[in-house]
Image (cartoon, rainbow, N blue to C red; front, side):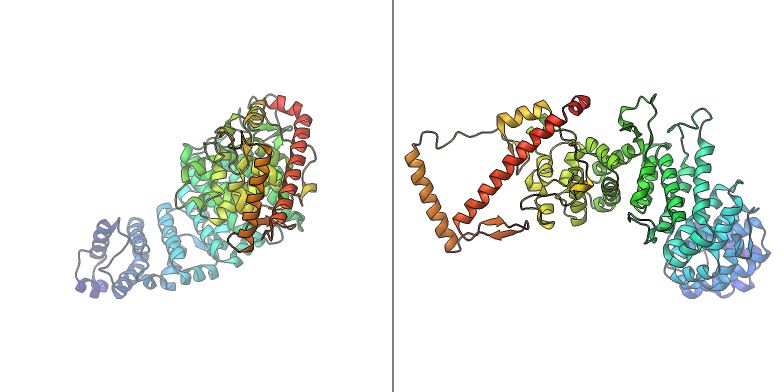
Length: 571
């Protein structure tokens, strides 16, 4: 501020014109500042108190200047106590038209309402004391009331945006407000209606009933994101609903199924650019993670016969929404792989796909075709090499983040119908070992959730894969074909020499085990690794493994024959 300490000591003696000049100088100098070291708590308190003493007599433009100046001060945590008293918070609430007893549903001074709401938003975000004050003073109730009464009318874009921003902040910080907005004010219904109205207003008359064709503006998407964030808060603490197969409340079930249906339509909308569209899809995915498993069927719709989009139809269902989520995952991995924010960027969408695939057979089969199509000549490369979604998810299985690698592995495991051998086939034993060890799946394989999956197989290897497998063999550890075959060193040995060398090897191995030099491991009946006590025990374990793989090979051959028609259809 172009002023001395004396200026703060005599603020109350300045005329309105001189005071406004000082305020204007301060604002122009600090418009881009986020800290004000020249203002200690006492000076800031004097400035703010004088501002609200005079603001009652100022005209609209002067009030706007004062509110802009106050907004600058709300950016800094230091000295925030000067702004958290009722003498500041109550006038702000009144200027925003959000007094609980007198909600202004048709504000005249739009810019001043917006500036007051910006100040309130900053203070709510920065100060627990302000959060408590506005929770008690009924700001959330007033916002919900304004939303209710302006659903069918046009409210200024800036006002509706900051209304929703404050409702998001308050519902994020206070569980009681979440319950009140959800139950007393029926907030879910009104927010659903707003989303529908936005999409309806942007749809072309000819394409209004189509699955696509709606293009949203930047302002639309910014507002929708605040709505989606608020809906996330309102649905995050429904313990009897979230991720449970049995939903107790029929009314809540109907609300959430309607929400998923609306989110499906929103997924099909376009943004002004790819970046903005991805931002919207990110918040849709976050909200979908709160939904019960029984609601995901709403993401599907009957397929339209005239639809030329081959990627969006499966088993008579339009899968375009699922297709968009899968492509969103692909884009997210490409963008965040190897970065520090990979966990934050990928966990929600991988978790969502895992829940959907576990709960809905149609979604699982479609995701299986997208992520794990029948193997072909790509088996000459490692499963981690390449830019297909299978390659990217396999790389995630060895990510430093334990949560990310576990969820990625579990998703692939579910897509393989929880078959360990199929998982190893697509990812290689080396990549799958962590999951198999953590879940005790290293022993003789059985599928504890076999009844959850259909008996018909969707396994069908391509001819090129079978040719490579039969000619070179597939290394189960790496998941890659053994193209570099070395010459057999025992090629010219007699049978007698082979027997002698085997006996030497067994004796040396037995001595090494007995003296504790090495501790070879075998897998017990529970799938856990345990030390082998003798060479004989190693031999017995190896024979069991050979018999198991012979049975698996026969099973895969049977699957291939049963899926012959499907293989041709896929081709």
